[in-house]
Image (cartoon, rainbow, N blue to C red; front, side, top):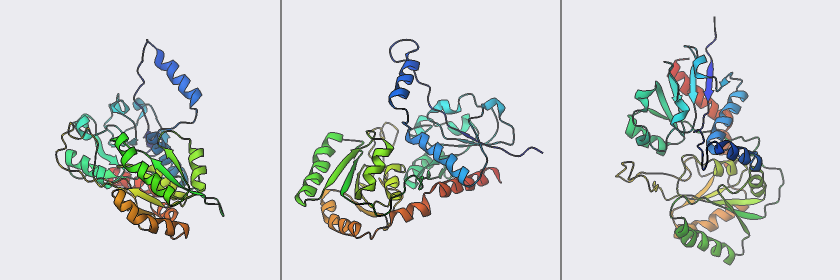
Amino acid sequence: MKKDRLLIYFKEEPRKDSFIYGDRYLILLIKKILFPKKVSSLERVFINLCKGFDFLKVEYIKNLPFHKIRKDDRIITLGIGKSALKGYKKSNKIIAGIGLMTHPSNWPNLFKEYPISVYLQHSEWTAAIYNRWYGENHCKIWPAGIDTNFWKPKENSTKKHLLLYVKFLWNKEENEVKLLAPIELFLKDKQISYKIIRYGSYSLTDYKELLQESIGMIFLCEHESQGLAYQEAMSMNVPILAWDKGVWLDSNRFDWGEKELVPASSAPYFSEECGEKFHNLLSFKSIFNQFYAKSTLHEYSPRNYVINNLSLEKSASKMLEIIKEVYGS
């Protein structure tokens, strides 16, 4: 008797030519040479799920051609864009996500075009958007795993500075002037050493080294569906002071038909042991002394939170629960 197989897919949108016919292949080659280890956040989600299954000793097959799928196979697709499902003509139910679209209005008939059983989102606030469009319980929450073995602090490391992580998504120039600059001035006035790192401009090794020396991290991003970067910091046991405006600010939301205020979070996985949050510059100044003192005295324990909620094993176990709900075993 053949054993039911678990098939996991990750497919990206095919690259298009930029200037002349076929130049996409040359551009891809150049990028591989210049950035040999550059992995997108969505691909990292796929890689970490596979690692989690490896830890749990769950067998799976990656990216098996669709025509080789058997009728009892269980399917997970974590691709990017609509092409991730292009050519799928089987009747097997699919667990799909995370980045097949930016908003459900981009693919309103997804559940009619393909035998999608559930669509995955990383957090409660993003899942709520999809469930409003597709219907209750069509979207399930599944947090990606953090590799706590890689993101592990060295014992007795010297803490030298605060780290400012900057990932402004909207109104970037205004936020640089009205939020980042005043925070820098505030830290300078207090003679607190700090370093700045910006989203998309660092290697994992550089980030890890900075975290190793960080007393805490000020995380400046309007909202995150999950927030792998700040969770990697927490896995390094670096407390977080997160700017959290509490609402979704994507400038495209009105074009997508969102007329009401949508709750959101920059740190959707968080507790008192992880650090603190602030809403604006005034609340930053109000909470900072408490955050800095507790961070210096090691009174937060963010790594424990990650291990208990967001480890590779926890993430893979949650996926197994979803698989059981969909396929019954």
